Length: 168
Image 1 (spheres, helix red, strand yellow):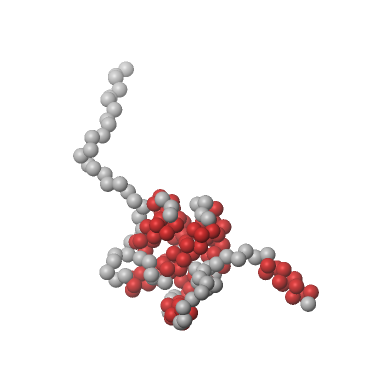
Image 2 (cartoon, one colour):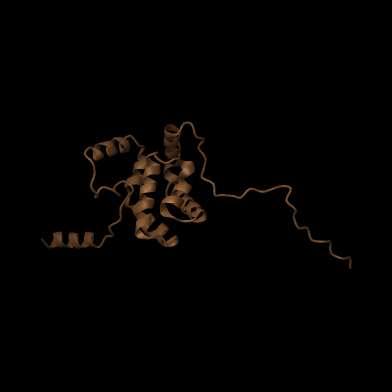
């Protein structure tokens, strides 16, 4: 009994973070939801399943992204859902940054930084499988890395050129 109590105490100290896999499991679902969900999940490559289910993904969102970008608990939960939808191929990679900006209600520059951090620090082990999934789900769209917004440059816009320095 004492050993069981120690194990319960050990687990009660763990944070209750959600992974992209289980983020919405504890809310009311329609009949057949879990069957449909597993039909989408099971065919995914192992590398993507690992990101979806691993606690380290939840820790990354909660303890790295959250504090770095001052995200509230609702924003972290929504980011977890966005990541799930991206890995399931329900969000096009080229729309990732815009989706983050719109659903988290953050400015485009912050969304670009969040996406860059996710791509570099979380998705790298599965990037080839993500590309493959994206090509299957969005064959009509070219797969490209989300790019931050850059204002157009006008080549015939006057530029300041300083006058030459006087000779000495």
